[in-house]
Amino acid sequence: MNNKKILNFIFELGQLKRVKHEGWKLIGIDNPESVAEHSLRAAQIGFILAKLEKYKNPSEVCSILVFHDIAECRIGDIHKVGNRYISVDEEKVIKEQTAKLENIGKEISGMFKQTERRNTEAGIIAKDADFLEMAFMAKEYLERGYSFAQDWIDNISKSVKTKSAVSLLKDLQKSNSNDWWQGLKKMKG
Image (cartoon, rainbow, N blue to C red; front, side, top):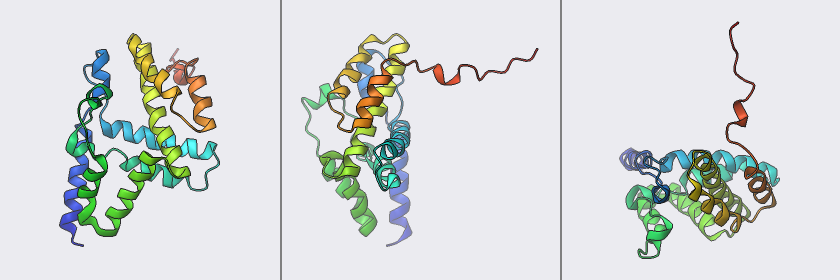
Protein backbone atom coordinates (compact mmCIF):
# COMPACT_ATOMS: atom_id res chain seq x y z
CA MET A 1 0.00 0.00 0.00
CA ASN A 2 1.38 3.41 -0.85
CA ASN A 3 1.50 6.38 1.46
CA LYS A 4 -0.75 8.46 -0.80
CA LYS A 5 -3.75 6.28 0.12
CA ILE A 6 -3.02 6.66 3.82
CA LEU A 7 -2.47 10.41 3.50
CA ASN A 8 -5.77 10.86 1.66
CA PHE A 9 -7.62 8.87 4.32
CA ILE A 10 -6.08 10.94 7.13
CA PHE A 11 -6.98 14.18 5.34
CA GLU A 12 -10.53 12.88 4.99
CA LEU A 13 -10.66 12.14 8.73
CA GLY A 14 -9.91 15.82 9.28
CA GLN A 15 -13.40 16.60 7.98
CA LEU A 16 -14.79 15.34 11.30
CA LYS A 17 -13.49 18.54 12.90
CA ARG A 18 -15.78 20.50 10.56
CA VAL A 19 -18.92 18.35 10.76
CA LYS A 20 -21.23 19.47 13.57
CA HIS A 21 -23.59 17.28 15.56
CA GLU A 22 -26.79 18.39 13.85
CA GLY A 23 -29.34 17.05 16.34
CA TRP A 24 -28.50 19.76 18.84
CA LYS A 25 -29.64 22.40 16.36
CA LEU A 26 -33.21 21.12 16.85
CA ILE A 27 -33.16 22.61 20.37
CA GLY A 28 -31.53 25.87 19.37
CA ILE A 29 -27.83 25.17 19.81
CA ASP A 30 -26.21 27.45 17.22
CA ASN A 31 -22.72 25.99 17.32
CA PRO A 32 -22.81 22.38 18.56
CA GLU A 33 -19.68 20.31 19.07
CA SER A 34 -18.04 18.68 16.10
CA VAL A 35 -18.16 14.97 15.42
CA ALA A 36 -14.42 14.85 16.18
CA GLU A 37 -15.00 16.41 19.61
CA HIS A 38 -17.77 13.90 20.26
CA SER A 39 -15.57 10.99 19.17
CA LEU A 40 -12.71 12.03 21.45
CA ARG A 41 -14.82 12.17 24.61
CA ALA A 42 -16.71 9.02 23.59
CA ALA A 43 -13.36 7.18 23.32
CA GLN A 44 -12.33 8.49 26.73
CA ILE A 45 -15.64 7.40 28.23
CA GLY A 46 -15.24 4.07 26.44
CA PHE A 47 -11.94 3.39 28.18
CA ILE A 48 -13.47 4.18 31.57
CA LEU A 49 -16.61 2.17 30.85
CA ALA A 50 -14.55 -0.81 29.69
CA LYS A 51 -12.59 -0.68 32.96
CA LEU A 52 -15.80 -0.46 34.99
CA GLU A 53 -17.18 -3.44 33.06
CA LYS A 54 -13.89 -5.30 33.65
CA TYR A 55 -13.42 -5.73 29.91
CA LYS A 56 -10.04 -7.27 29.09
CA ASN A 57 -8.96 -4.72 26.47
CA PRO A 58 -10.16 -1.13 27.08
CA SER A 59 -7.89 0.11 24.27
CA GLU A 60 -9.95 -1.90 21.79
CA VAL A 61 -13.07 -0.01 22.87
CA CYS A 62 -11.21 3.31 22.46
CA SER A 63 -10.09 2.35 18.97
CA ILE A 64 -13.63 1.42 17.97
CA LEU A 65 -14.90 4.79 19.17
CA VAL A 66 -12.19 6.78 17.42
CA PHE A 67 -13.48 5.39 14.11
CA HIS A 68 -17.20 4.89 14.82
CA ASP A 69 -18.45 8.04 13.07
CA ILE A 70 -16.03 8.29 10.14
CA ALA A 71 -18.80 7.88 7.57
CA GLU A 72 -19.89 11.37 8.58
CA CYS A 73 -16.83 12.73 6.73
CA ARG A 74 -18.81 12.03 3.55
CA ILE A 75 -22.46 12.14 4.55
CA GLY A 76 -22.46 14.63 7.42
CA ASP A 77 -24.35 14.10 10.64
CA ILE A 78 -28.02 13.42 10.07
CA HIS A 79 -30.18 13.85 13.16
CA LYS A 80 -32.91 11.40 14.14
CA VAL A 81 -35.73 13.48 12.66
CA GLY A 82 -33.90 13.55 9.32
CA ASN A 83 -33.29 9.81 9.58
CA ARG A 84 -37.05 9.31 9.31
CA TYR A 85 -36.82 10.46 5.69
CA ILE A 86 -33.29 9.73 4.57
CA SER A 87 -31.87 6.24 4.29
CA VAL A 88 -28.09 6.17 4.57
CA ASP A 89 -25.91 3.07 4.39
CA GLU A 90 -23.04 4.05 6.71
CA GLU A 91 -21.53 0.58 6.41
CA LYS A 92 -21.24 1.08 2.64
CA VAL A 93 -19.65 4.49 3.15
CA ILE A 94 -17.05 3.10 5.55
CA LYS A 95 -16.34 0.15 3.26
CA GLU A 96 -15.64 2.57 0.40
CA GLN A 97 -13.62 4.93 2.62
CA THR A 98 -11.35 2.16 3.83
CA ALA A 99 -11.17 -0.09 0.74
CA LYS A 100 -7.82 1.28 -0.42
CA LEU A 101 -6.30 0.70 3.01
CA GLU A 102 -6.31 -3.10 2.56
CA ASN A 103 -6.04 -4.91 5.94
CA ILE A 104 -6.08 -1.67 7.91
CA GLY A 105 -9.32 -0.77 6.19
CA LYS A 106 -10.87 -4.16 6.89
CA GLU A 107 -10.03 -3.75 10.56
CA ILE A 108 -11.57 -0.25 10.73
CA SER A 109 -14.68 -1.48 8.92
CA GLY A 110 -14.94 -4.38 11.36
CA MET A 111 -14.78 -2.01 14.32
CA PHE A 112 -17.69 0.00 12.92
CA LYS A 113 -19.74 -3.17 12.53
CA GLN A 114 -19.14 -4.15 16.16
CA THR A 115 -20.55 -0.85 17.37
CA GLU A 116 -23.56 -0.73 15.11
CA ARG A 117 -24.49 -4.39 15.49
CA ARG A 118 -23.59 -4.54 19.18
CA ASN A 119 -22.62 -8.15 18.58
CA THR A 120 -19.46 -8.22 20.71
CA GLU A 121 -18.74 -7.15 24.25
CA ALA A 122 -16.45 -4.39 22.93
CA GLY A 123 -19.18 -3.22 20.54
CA ILE A 124 -21.77 -3.07 23.32
CA ILE A 125 -19.45 -1.09 25.58
CA ALA A 126 -18.47 1.22 22.70
CA LYS A 127 -22.10 1.96 21.79
CA ASP A 128 -22.91 2.65 25.43
CA ALA A 129 -19.95 5.05 25.59
CA ASP A 130 -21.20 6.75 22.40
CA PHE A 131 -24.61 7.17 24.01
CA LEU A 132 -23.12 8.33 27.31
CA GLU A 133 -21.11 11.05 25.59
CA MET A 134 -24.32 12.42 24.11
CA ALA A 135 -25.99 12.22 27.53
CA PHE A 136 -23.14 14.20 29.09
CA MET A 137 -23.44 16.80 26.34
CA ALA A 138 -27.20 16.92 26.89
CA LYS A 139 -26.67 17.47 30.62
CA GLU A 140 -24.32 20.37 29.86
CA TYR A 141 -26.91 21.89 27.50
CA LEU A 142 -29.67 21.35 30.06
CA GLU A 143 -27.71 23.37 32.59
CA ARG A 144 -27.40 26.18 30.03
CA GLY A 145 -31.18 26.35 29.79
CA TYR A 146 -31.94 24.09 26.82
CA SER A 147 -34.71 22.09 28.50
CA PHE A 148 -35.38 19.89 25.48
CA ALA A 149 -31.93 18.33 25.90
CA GLN A 150 -33.59 16.12 28.52
CA ASP A 151 -35.08 14.19 25.59
CA TRP A 152 -31.60 12.87 24.72
CA ILE A 153 -31.02 11.65 28.28
CA ASP A 154 -34.46 10.01 28.42
CA ASN A 155 -33.94 8.19 25.11
CA ILE A 156 -30.39 7.15 25.97
CA SER A 157 -31.60 5.78 29.31
CA LYS A 158 -33.74 3.32 27.35
CA SER A 159 -30.85 2.29 25.09
CA VAL A 160 -27.78 1.62 27.24
CA LYS A 161 -27.07 -2.02 28.03
CA THR A 162 -24.14 -2.24 30.47
CA LYS A 163 -24.65 -2.01 34.22
CA SER A 164 -21.98 0.66 34.47
CA ALA A 165 -23.62 2.86 31.83
CA VAL A 166 -27.00 2.54 33.53
CA SER A 167 -25.43 3.52 36.85
CA LEU A 168 -23.51 6.46 35.38
CA LEU A 169 -26.63 7.77 33.64
CA LYS A 170 -28.63 7.60 36.84
CA ASP A 171 -26.01 9.59 38.73
CA LEU A 172 -25.47 11.98 35.81
CA GLN A 173 -29.01 13.24 36.17
CA LYS A 174 -28.36 14.19 39.81
CA SER A 175 -25.00 15.82 39.10
CA ASN A 176 -23.84 19.26 38.01
CA SER A 177 -21.32 19.63 35.21
CA ASN A 178 -19.47 22.34 37.14
CA ASP A 179 -18.84 20.24 40.25
CA TRP A 180 -15.47 19.03 38.95
CA TRP A 181 -13.75 22.40 39.36
CA GLN A 182 -15.34 23.50 42.63
CA GLY A 183 -12.64 24.10 45.24
CA LEU A 184 -9.80 24.14 42.68
CA LYS A 185 -9.56 27.91 42.27
CA LYS A 186 -6.65 29.48 44.06
CA MET A 187 -7.16 33.06 45.13
CA LYS A 188 -4.19 35.31 45.81
CA GLY A 189 -4.64 37.10 49.06
